[in-house]
Length: 83
Image: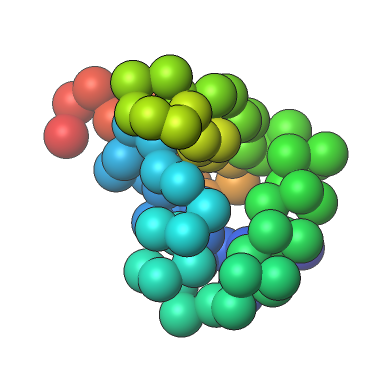
């Protein structure tokens, strides 16, 4: 079962390529500590992945939805390509 906070993050990430923890926290109305702990837990569950965005200075960590995360919110690769 996915908690409501985790679900709001996953739903917000569905239509984005990637986002920083601060952008996710602002969009989902969560404190920095709460959003970081949720992101760490979801990364351990492989619902999201992170990478270093080197296009900005200084580089920052961004998070993106995995196929497992898409399935958990009811989206799959086919539905994202078609609409």
